[in-house]
Amino acid sequence: MNQKTYLRLMLVLTVAYGLLIAVLSMLGIGNIGLVAIVGGLVVGLGWALTSVIAKRGPTP
Image (cartoon, rainbow, N blue to C red; front, side, top):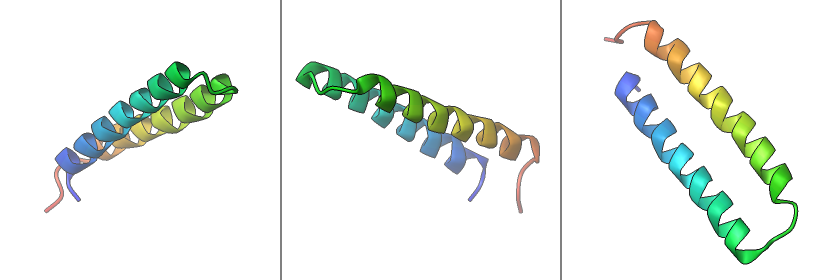
């Protein structure tokens, strides 16, 4: 996988996470705060790892 693949994957995961939180809040499902916190941490760590991979430079 190259840098662009990681960036696209993280973008898709971030959008999917946002949609999940939106749908859960519209449906009024309880404990949305916990889902938001855990998901936010996972997405944040994913973006951090993506930036580390991007700093390595292109892979052959």
